[in-house]
Each structure stands twice: as C-alpha cells, then as structure tokens.
Amino acid sequence: MKKITLFNVLLLALIFSATSCVEKPQTTPVSSKTLNLPNTPFDYTSVIVSNVNDENPAVTPNGATLGRVLFYDPALSLNNRVSCASCHLQEKAFADVGAHSIGFEGKITPRNSMAILNPVMNRSLFWDSRATSAANLALQPAQNHIEMGMEDLDYLAEKLQKMDYYPNLFEKAFGQGAISKENISNALAQFLCSMTTFNSKFDRVQKGEVEFTTLEAMGNSIFHGRGKCNKCHSGDNFMADDSPSGPYGGTTNSGLSVAGTANTGLDRFTKDKGRNNGSFRIPSLRNIAVTGPYMHDGRFETLEDVLNFYSHGIQDHENLDPKLTENGQPIRFNFSELEKQALIAFLNTLTDEEYLTAEKYSSPFK
Image 1 (cartoon, rainbow, N blue to C red):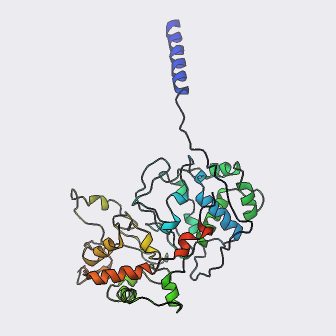
Image 2 (image 1 turned 90 degrees about the vertical axis):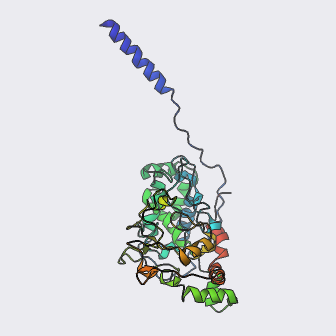
Image 3 (image 1 turned 135 degrees about the vertical axis):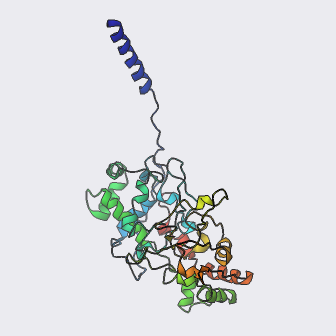
C-alpha cells in the first residue's frame, strides 16, 4: 500500500512538473508606435447626412477621435495582432485586399470584408444583415472567435485601462472613469458614423460642378436604364432599402449559388446560405472601383468579372430575386464590350479620393 501511495505521489509530481513547463501562448506586444493626434480634434460632424439611422449615437469630436484610435489599435484583439483596420484599409474604402481576411490567430474568415461606406445611414450591416446599426455592429468583430477573439469585453475594458493613452481619451469623450465596454462600443460607433463619403465625381456632377464624359454618361444611362442596376443600387448610397420592415433587410439572392455543383469546383460557393436561402446584403456601390474582390465570398476579382456575371451568368435558384428574372428564367443582359466599358467608366465616377486619403480617417499611430 505504501509503495502504491509513493508511486502515485511521484507520478503526480512528474505530471505537475511537465505541465508547468508547457509554454503559454505568446501574445504580440502592444504597438510601441507613437499616438499622434492633433491638439484640436478633427471635424467629424460637418457633412450633413440624410436618412440617418437613429439607433446610432450622436457624433462628437472627442468621441470620434477615441473611436479612431480604437479602430486602429491591435490591442482590441486578444493577442494584440490585428485591429479593425487590419481588414478595413482606407485606400480600399475600408475593404480588404483579399477575398477573405486573416484573423488574430491566422485563421481565414469565411466572408469577404465589406467596405465601410456611410454606415450612419445603414439599418442592416454585415453580409447577412444581422446588425441593425453601427452601434450594434461595433464590437461584434472584436468578439468573433476568428477575427479578433476578444470574447470577454470586461477584460477588454480592463486591458485598455492599463494603457497609458486611453484613460485621458475616454475622459475627454465620456467623463472620468469612463472606460467600459459600453463606451468602447459607443466610441467605435461614433467613428464609424463619422465616415461619410459624398465627394466623388458623380456627386460633383449632381451639383453641376463638372460633367460626365461621353463614356461615363453612356454608363449612367445603362445603369439607370436597360441594365436595371438602380433597381438594387439606388438612393444617395447606391444600395437597397435596408429597412427592418423589408422582407430580408436589404438582402437578395442574385443567382450566385448553383444547385447541384458538387465536384465541379463551384460547390464551395453554395455552403454559405447567407440570411435566407442564398440571400446576401446588397452593398453600396460608392467607391466600388477600389473595393474588390467582389461578392460575399470575393469570387470576382474585377468589375469586368462582375459585369460578365450579370451579363450572362446569373444562375437559376428557387429564391432568385424576381428583378433578375425574365419570363420565369434568369435574365440575360448580354452587355456588349462597349456597354461594359461604359458601365465601368460610370462606376469609376463613384470613387471619392478624399475619403481614401483623409487624415481624420487614417491611422493615428505613427
């Protein structure tokens, strides 16, 4: 009995010794870059936006400034490896360079990162429209187990409290002792709601400041005419009505999914059902020329690829949007090469160069 007891004790000691030597997961040190903010906050409220979603917080200069810092800070991820800006690049109108983004542990996200385009107007966000406002969206990526891994938001608040620049920034935005998960979300939402893009050539044409070229004018005519593009991409933000009262909150099945495609190389596109049987968010077309690759899975590299699909590649589906059917079959627009060039020329007029370069939306870390 004594031998067994001694053996057990020795075995437990050996196990404890071995497990205590296992290396704990390492985190990347928080960035040592210098935070460079102007003495007077940027003006984040000068652009008057119609059709604002009233679920969002009011934007203040100090609140949006704090949100800007949070947006670019990798400290919001569990291991300090990725920030919101890692998947939303300003020069891409806050979209990503690849079809899928890389999360905090190197895993690949299942959907293409959407561009950030006037979210203050949106009433449904993400490809499946699961968020009803920028305020509702703000911390979902941080909590996602693939994207940023910060599932415990109370821990995030404690983490930021210990960083030298956050207490002062939160105090300016919300008052003393204001670092909380609620205020982290609020500040991020303020920055998102300040991100407005209404200074493209298209906007200047509407104001009578400049004119379309002949090719751009032709593309505009096709877009609003036989191409029927404006049936899904309309209004100031070139997107569908995303009111919660709508059938699927601004989503549609655009004929991307193909039934019975196993072993054809296309079956990977059918696994994600979106919000409802193949329906995905209809995104804004603002800055569309710089936000590729396109669609929820990033399958199309170029605008020409997208136009080729809508020209002759729409697939039949039980849930196919009726706007994309003709006589009960998927519509075939059969755009000519000239028509495609004209549409691309028009879409290029939706690029807002100021939005892609403005310092107030850029990284504050230098």
